[in-house]
Image 1 (cartoon, helix red, strand yellow):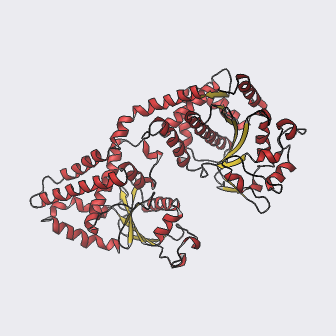
Image 2 (image 1 turned 60 degrees about the horizontal axis):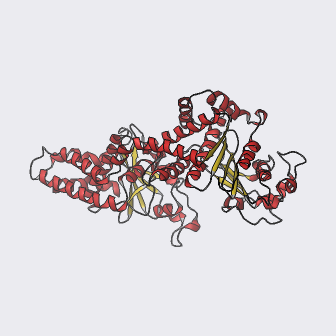
Image 3 (image 1 turned 90 degrees about the horizontal axis):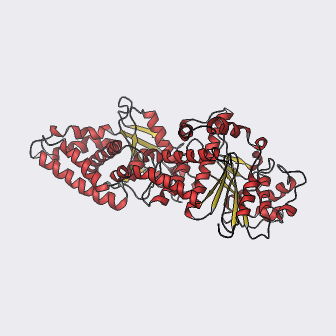
Length: 545
């Protein structure tokens, strides 16, 4: 541990232990009923169940989901131990996370809200930031390493909601205290409030100056609020960040799935509650690397499938060959002409996809509206190929219809958009038996997550979205136009002077994708490739007007 002596580590462990009475009653119940005396498989199953459980009003379920969020925060810091940023991590399932190295100790508290009527943001006066002693209890941990002992202390509050300024109390600058060393002025609102309630959550005679050798002002300079996973109904983005962080520790191209993450959390919970230290766990670099090895073994077992689904050229060859096989009974000249068209299409796909982005990203953007999704990361190889085939067939007909290349725009990182002369065409994949209403909700969700820059680009063009997949073809049969002014909202100041939101045509056209791909099932009806192309353009142009 370098300069950090063993007796100091023991001091840390002793200082942060809590008595049974001090434990959060709800978390204490979860540990007792769901973790203690249960096997790793039992705990692993519990964690998987949380992902499928919508937050409810029941306090136990809320506590369970908040507990899971806290565990995810722990994994984020475990990755930083493996990266070498920290020498150790101290984990208490019911309370704090503490990380440290030879020069710095960081104390982390996690606060979460998961009820259905929760807001993504709360004004500071609606929280217990200072009235409930959140800040006071956190910065008072500096007493373990008083100023002058050569150790810098840092204090972090992780939340799953954003704490905003109120009309009377400004705290926004604590959200951006990235270096844990900002200036705190005498008229700082949080300083005033913490000073007013300085012993809230502490003993009445507690003195920061006597115990920490520092004033509240000095301690607050190293305090920050760090919101994570603000949308509690969608853990994907936060888990995705953890997956990416852990995956890069294994290999640049490796990925860590939901299942892998929950397995690792199960290992942590089991070790914490089946050891001599009870619910307290100390993880040094050696132990952290043991957990990394657990992940490596799990990821490597899926490596063959991973490689198979990310080899662009091999997949393109396999899918285009499969499409071409369906035309082997055609008569010449159509047979050879169709073969030539598909061969050109195959070569085009290889050049475009390899240069711009992978099939992996293309399928993820098609189904989720973002370049990476943990939900799809463990998709079976066969289903992945089926989705890629859906995209390729639609692209082939689009190429015939527009008589131009159909590369998707590099300006967009989420939705899969093709830029045409005066309009955009996007592809959104629907699942089995999904309806028009479900498709519109999916499109709405994708658009809401777009950046302001992407929204501005979208607003400046006419837009068409092709719904593709094995959807309910009784429900999605005809071209549909909808008004999306409530979906895409961009402030006027973000738009160019030439055009404001008021000038924008919000009409958005939805196109049933099966109307496109049905032409590929009717190829044998045509005499040659030219009559096929003429019919496609004649019957499908109406969808893009």
